[in-house]
Image (tube, rainbow, N blue to C red; front, side, top):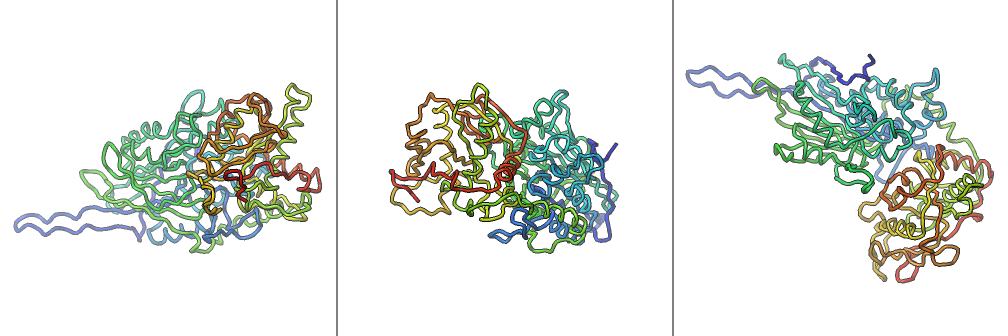
Length: 598
């Protein structure tokens, strides 16, 4: 049976000459008694990454140059590999484990290319670059992320087959049998100098939101119950099986919040709740939220014991280190001390072993993304799209609206007006004047979302827009407006702010949330609450992502399996020339007491 298919993986590793061993200091002997034996102690380190999102090289395929951001972070497994080698050299390779908390095979054009352009699923096809790199680095276990399901289960299963480590998902269950569809855990044996091995269990948990976000790929095939429920089931089992240390690798943030409202009875970001509610866990590698948490301690309600949580920053920008000190007491190993910290990948060079291993794959993808698909008469950018109606977002909306109109032509809903929603996924996306390449279009729409058509009323659309407008920080009339502080109110990410084309409206940011949409109109007249419209909407939003009102329950009139990004590319190819003057419109704007903010 292949190693990664096992529901119980045990790796026995021998301690090396550089064993991280701390000897206890013996107490003075009693005058007439035997000298006490020193306590048996052993130390080891668990390294962790998360949300790698297809990043191997320190390279941005959307800009076709080395990755950089305002904080001068670096990305990629090649950098992580260098850090891992340093830690193994310091601690002793056999006193370390390396795990990941998911979202591995989606996010860059490198990962897209080997899922869609030259897919790993074709007969005699390639080995996925992420599998090659992670195998070479020597990962011990990886939890499933929600984006693992974006390309469908066949691609995920092929990736699983190509990995030398298990993909863990204790709460990814077969829909019919309700048994784990992937290994729930792995068990690793660390050999100590004392003749008493340390058994480390890694429990993998993924995100219940998969049932919504990738409904088309998993419905009827898999179900995803809550993290707390499944951790409470498996942690006692792991302890009864002899686990001395239990680590959870959870593709779930620590905040206790959800983006899907009441669409599911489970919490999206439940890692902190797992620590608090389930006794017997020593540490949790946190993923999904794309935040950096070097160390966060949560007291378990039942035992009072601290659970150590850590989330390394996305894309391989950080490497978490969990350091454990164990002592042999009463016939078993117990954790005497545990802590966490992160290492920054911008402090090291890329590992030439990894960059050399995948140089050919990298070159193929660079050539692919630089293919010219058309031209543009003007430059367009998303730099101000979070607070202005910009032509580059209008481009997404016009492509989506035209695609839905063509799909509904000749049908019972052909005469209904088609509106469209779009978000600013990246504030650095741009379409240059002149030649447009695949990377330009891909940078505008980096997610694998597909397109749907939903039937909504004017009243529902007003509530939809009011919900979207909570994105803005309330700013009184006359007060200065700082665009650096204007958006992302209450932590709302850019991808959960929608601009809707086909309507005209103002967002009064001086007003409280829920009362901001002003002068909402269709074709110059106040919007009729009873009027019916077709909304062209991505599948993430249509399935409840972001918890926008009404859209998830709205009748589905049409759905497409083609990614919106590819639809954009095909549209540009068909047009040949993109002229913003033909589709750009000022459909919405920010105001205060009727006065435009910009």
